[in-house]
Length: 155
Image (cartoon, rainbow, N blue to C red):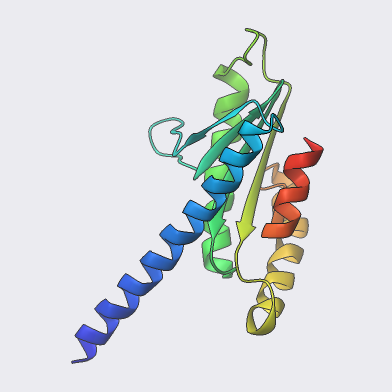
């Protein structure tokens, strides 16, 4: 009985995550159609094992995006490692659309739940990114969905 509950709970979490990822993809489609971004790829792969949810291109800038429903510290720590390595690989290998080197590589984590019970975890994770990630040049930003939309417009 406990195993059934755990399985159902994990299935529900997976569904919420997939739905949020689809929401982010919808925002990216709209941004591309309105020429806010040049294009995007879903589930790009770098070095065989580093896979953000999306890669967005705008001129000579690449933005790596990971989407998560909550800002749990263990989840954020895993994404730091992925972002650090993906950014290193991109800078050494990837060209921009015009054939020149990519000049700017940013990485962000977009968090669905940033209010109510999750607000404290979101603020704690933002502080963690500031203190631990920026010196490593891993994840640059931890954003709410609203902040993410503003970032897309500012690229």
